[in-house]
Amino acid sequence: MVLVLLKTHWRLHALINHDEENVSMRIKELVELWENNAKHTLTKETFGVHLTIEDAAKLKALSDMYPQRTKEQLLSELVSAALLELESSFPYIAGQEIATHDEFGDPIYKDTGHSPRFQELTRHYLAHQQSAKQ
Image (cartoon, rainbow, N blue to C red; front, top):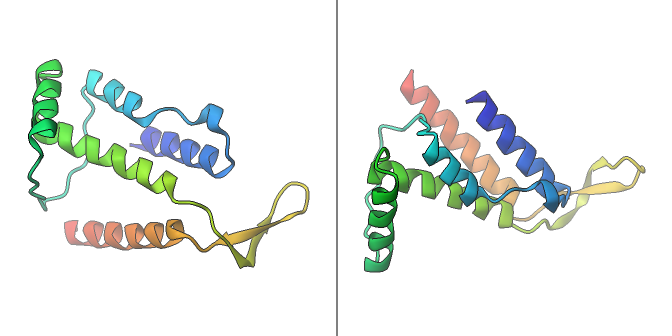
């Protein structure tokens, strides 16, 4: 789990610094996870979805290609990869407040785009899930 968090942190750090060379393709990593039969901590809450017939066919194809993974595991991991991609796609919008300074002393302004709110809400719901688990 720590290794996954470190790898995620490194990718986000690379994204923030626009270091596209070090940002690997998450879907490729997802396939590697499937190859290694990774396990994740799951919530007790479930989410039901209706897929298009095209997406259902693709899911079944992946299920045939990776029989060690259930369709539910594949969907869960695809959603995780998509959410990470979504989060990294939120544009940085510089606000008026200076958050920090870069190595040259130039100001870096607080992000007023969707990223900070998404991260705040994610932390809120994660804390809620963790407290409910105890």
